[in-house]
Image (tube, rainbow over all chains, first blue to last red; front, side, top):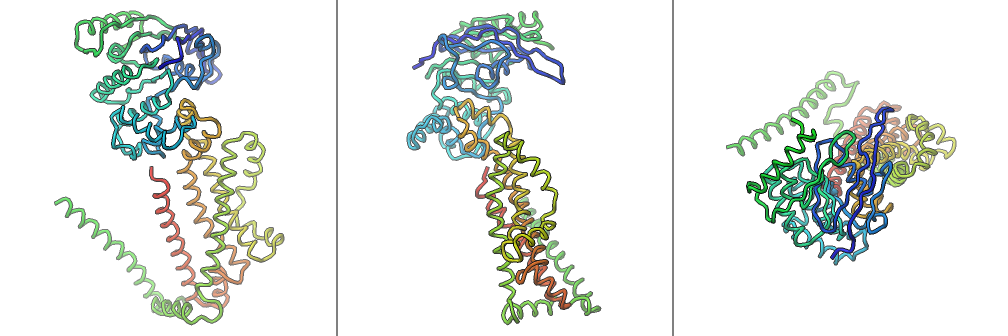
Length: 254
Length: 255
């Protein structure tokens, strides 16, 4: 049950200082994130997608612009983020990692342990409660990270190339599961990737970032019903179209 | 097959290690047999050690060991406590760092034993002085490692902590300190061998008891056997401490 409505990304610009030289990364980014939609931000490496996501997550400050929600500044407690490098705490077991967001919220010990077990079950990691992150595979680590993000029980989830470091097979099953979880417990999702196939498989809508400094170049609505099939005609057609238009505007190189 | 091969290899390694110890003993025996004025033979040394334990004249060997050990124990634990606190404060509060760091950097390069004259003048030759010298030796590596552990923490832990809702206090206690824990333990390990070295040095100069004192006394009376025994105990205890520390580390830092 979501209480947060649409999110408004307004006039976001950001530049970095590199040895005294100012490098503009994001310029005047404007878009909306609709409630409960699965939005994919697509763009080449180093285009500033992650910077944009960190700005939305309030980890990083923009030079100008703001992230609004229902007419107010977007609050940190309404969102959580999943990182490409998992960012699990290696000193805690999987269960304790998942418990953390609830611990910070002041949920009682018994209650949060029970809930954390449920979330680990949701990502199909029953039996790994007492494992340490170093003892499990990359795909499993990312599942724990997703369970941890869900455990915050917030309305907005941000994913920063979460499956970028996984092998293709693991990636496919993770994508499938992520959609399943998202459909069972709807949230507003913003998902970053540089993989067109992944974008088309997951998204309700794809926003393409490109150029230097980056701005929004294209937007696609994906209306293929779920579960999607990667070798489906409609799937391939949209994929092709994005590829063409992206290549056309110099988004995908090589 | 492979299992058997591995067993063989392990056995061989053990034999080689044993040979290394034997080689030293043989050399020792040869030297002491030809030049009895340089050092007593291994057997004589062992006899002398038993004598010191079972039938001591004056302070027994165990009393010396206990005296050194107690000093290390008290100084090491208080240095750990103070060192971690100061190190964390360095890493966490910029104001504290800016204020105290220059003082710390100025005092840090002074070898702990160089403090002995000042400490003796200030605190006399009692227990406090020896403990203070050991404390200085242990304190510095713990502060340095704790601080560098906090500085070197992967920033992704801080980001993750922030997005899952940690406030400033929780960030410090639940994320930054545990993340620095391997560094803190490394500092504690250095500090432990440092403390042991410092206690011997301090006792060599100001003490009536302890292994450091025993070495100096034996030197003055030309008792090579006692010097050797003290040295064995110093190295043996140091090895034992670092072995115990590694065991403890595996228990409290299992990731």
